[in-house]
Length: 92
Image (cartoon, rainbow, N blue to C red; front, side, top):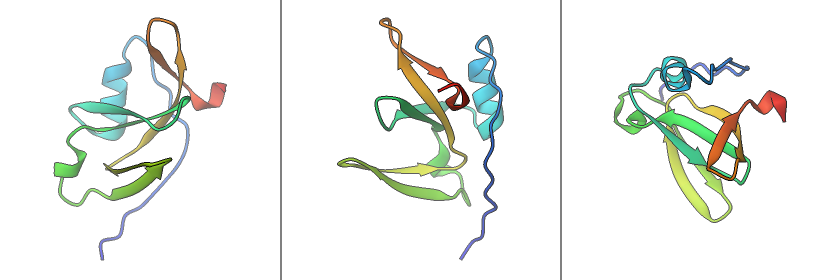
């Protein structure tokens, strides 16, 4: 069985450079934003399942089951009326 080191903490993301920051933090080229509830989203590597030795998390939210791979970045999301905006969980 492979072992992975897990850590948790808060990270700062610049709204001006959010895409760059997300890719840098999770080590990806492309991201996917997965809404797991009305107010929580997870930013993941869009190619995470294709990267060998990435940890794969099987998660269930309500009736929805999914696999998320690699580094997971959680954020709070709010509806602005024009779409969803990601904000720090620390601010909620």
